Image 1 (cartoon, helix red, strand yellow):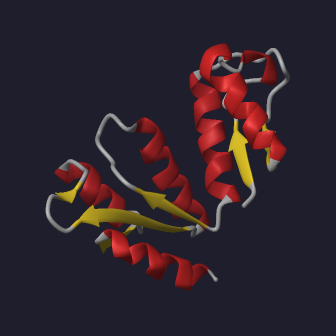
Image 2 (spheres, rainbow, N blue to C red):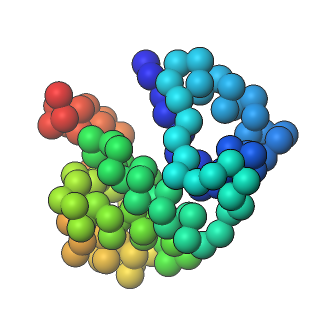
Amino acid sequence: GVSFAVLDTGFDNIPQAEGIPLAIDITREGGIISEYAPEFKLGDETLEASDRLLTALGQAVVITEVYQESRRIHDIIKFCSQIGKLSFLMIDPEFGPLADKESLEHAVRSGVIPLEGLDKTADIVKVLV
């Protein structure tokens, strides 16, 4: 398939060791998106903006874990709620959700749909196709 990556920096600030080879692979069958000038550095505002862009680009969001310290996941949950984007939280039938109680309750109040079992990913695809 086609893959796209959203940068939370400018293109000149992709981490060399792990980022450059991955960026090259992604651009072969997709692309890399940044809202920033090439020299722009990572900051709190760039993280939130890239989370907003990631949320807007997908057909739906699938969350595998959410904890109080998961700022980026909480941003994505907020943006999904604001724009009415379908969002799902995968729940392991044996171990339960990978989430603390407060974050799980917040996600559900914000419209995230809990799905128990990895086999439920097929249900997500059916909704989207």
